[in-house]
Image (cartoon, rainbow, N blue to C red; front, side, top):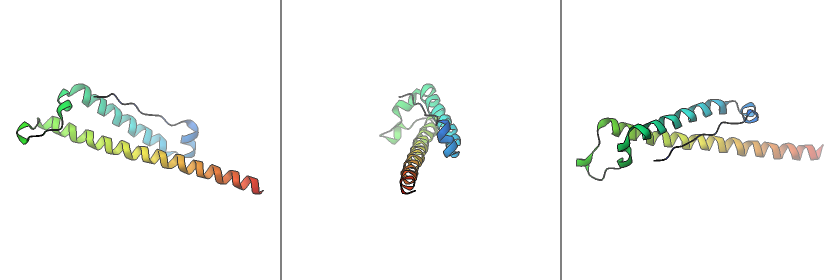
Length: 102
């Protein structure tokens, strides 16, 4: 088990990309949910069941499915952040190039 954290965007980043505020709130909720599941459902340590006779209780199985979806959403959130950073870097480079031409 690992306790995860999230990063809040800077004011400048939210100003440039307002959607980052909502994404940060979603990320925080996902981290809190994941940490809560891991803290209160110790069976998640054994969430990969090799034998169908060893299946967990339905609550544990559903929690494990939710943790999988949380991981997928957090990956997409990271991709959005990286895309925005790359776009800002590209736009900044173009702005510098335009300034040099003028």
